[in-house]
Image (tube, rainbow, N blue to C red; front, side, top):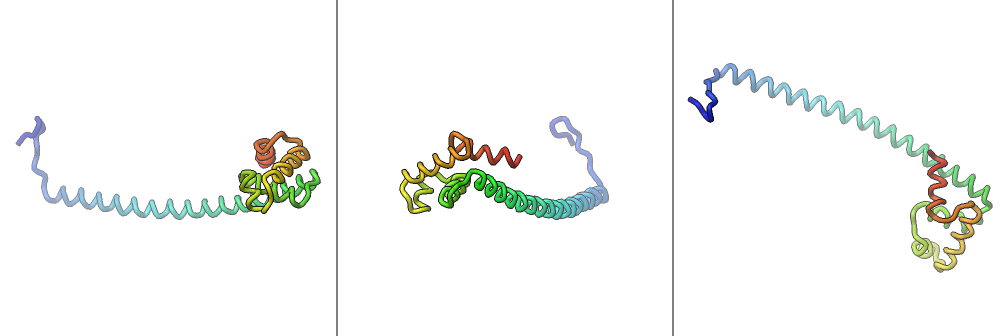
Length: 131
């Protein structure tokens, strides 16, 4: 019999059984390999988490050291930390219970003491220190 010009040949049941067994074996091996890879990835993720904790601790020490060098007041330190976390002036004012004008004045004092021109440069300063 022909279909689209391709001749179909009858296949013995033994051949079909062998193909099915090989397919099942391949699927089992694939599942086992998947489990091994997932376990390896879980170990790698644990290592990355540990490195992130170390980096986080180093970042905190780096911040404290620079805040000391810049002679930031306790309230300026709080504002600087919230700024580095990405909060806007309005959000910082809400969190601290202060006016936006007070937060702007504290940010300007921080930028002046740090020798940067604004929020972006302050964040970039710390990123460059870590890299």
